[in-house]
Length: 381
Image (cartoon, rainbow, N blue to C red; front, top):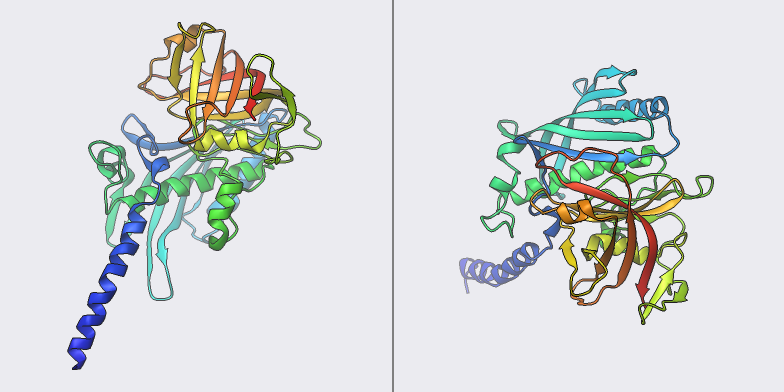
């Protein structure tokens, strides 16, 4: 058997293994990167996240964000990454950044792109809005792309919007992750726990135990019921669920048996189990309006949900995508959120809510987030 025959056989035998590896990669769960993962405002890609920090003044938030942005933009030691505008009176800070996004790195190869972006922070009393836009990519030094023509639903998803387009998939995934990383940085700057995996080896295990707090839609609320001893961070995020600092996933939820719903336990709202936070990201969130089982309006919160605290009260966020009908929930004074674990037909958690007044005016073509004070939380035994 000559050398060419041996080489051919080696390649032939290795091919199925390579194909199997590629197939495994294709089967990865891309749910969080599908429709809506790259938000657009008037045809422009704009990632945004609202942070609610009860008790902090506009000046305190402004100082915190100025320090954070200055440090973040200087990380790459690039003079073009810097704060370019600030107005303390209006609470506005704007900067331009340039960083590397790495697609793949090994001892033999490095696949990455340079990303340029604009970041704007708007500070108000107890509130902070962070916006990431004007994203541009420079690949292999000569290839230049705009986010609007490269990672949007129109280009990066198939016609049915059920799969990522091969070739653009890595760009969309890594850009969404990049935005999440920046938002996580902001949350940490305000004192939130950093839930990012420490090493790639532990990534899968860490994601199961402590889901990201920024991947989902909706605001992030920083500040627990007892600000002296607790920090609770919430988000709306497909994405991305929330992790309480001191009440993470007990083995058996504490509470008393529900008289209204057999098989469910009524949970103390000061000790919400980690499972409920995790369900906000991994499960299905259904909004039920009305008490009559046969005359009830049900809708899915397509853009996700979240849990948090406002003024010491437990609250739940639910977000409707722009194309969903919202008349029923607009008119309702109260509603029930039902959280279904994957592949389950009965809810794992039931949250009764009293709708709170909206703090912002909904904009046409944008997701609508509703906040409800949690009156009762029931969890399946």
